[in-house]
Image 1 (cartoon, rainbow, N blue to C red):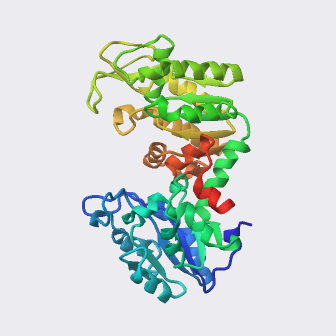
Image 2 (image 1 turned 90 degrees about the horizontal axis):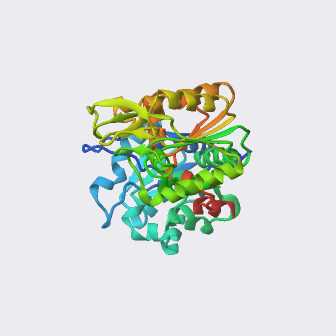
Image 3 (image 1 turned 180 degrees about the vertical axis):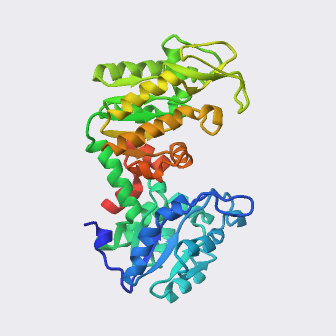
Length: 398
């Protein structure tokens, strides 16, 4: 049993670092509350024990101190709705007199949401004095913000030192994220297929290199596939290509061959004469795209090729779409990959989906419940798979 599940929060104030960095529209309405919903079980456990909850988070990237559009006050009503009418108090500051008084007055079963941590430059600087002030608001520190675990910020990595070992712990989101990531990286059942998409090879070099020691198959889709195609001498028309990464692409292919890892590149592509939702489209082998045309999705043969590989897998990691899935004409490949992952999961595979665009695709196509785990942390998950130590995790595990 985990430290969090085992801990009794009765009469204690749990200071919980959550990731409430949610998108807001012009009217300050939340357009995607996935991150807020993810942390509800953690909050509910503390409240059910008879404890109270003090939530701290950042929102956006405020440059010069407080700004209304980045205020967490816009989340209060929705949080109250999600928690079925639990009393939500709000402090107009995350430190200072108001925060201290409201935290002190908090009763069991109540929630206090602090104002945006990033209204203070000290948060991102990892300032120990700022972290200490935050720490004084609660009895127990719970880090449930996997999305910021790769940042050595005051509220994610520095604050833990002000709590004894039995009073600092991961929340349920963090526990689930860490367990799922470790299962894929260190306890994966073979065959293990990693599906890596997105625009740029440069963003994914480290993750591919680290996966070469673990995966049996690596599927490469999205814009980055054309850098590989060009590196191998193919014609890619005006498809996305990082010309300064052609040697890197060849190097990765060589390393994969030496380690016996099978790299799958899309044999054919859906091509367009412009980067536009209403462009003219056609299909072509991915290494024979005519001038003036660009690959914006994987083709029918590639879909079948990738699907067959995914369906025989026992462990699946998906990071990055296969094409410009936001445009209906170019979403088929990403949808087919999502479908194949759902089928493999149903047949007993463990599937982890992470990275903003993959998560958006899974949500858009209705597959959230059909994969094993959907990660809330984009950058954090990537850095974990690159083999880096995440400060927010290390601070609790020390």
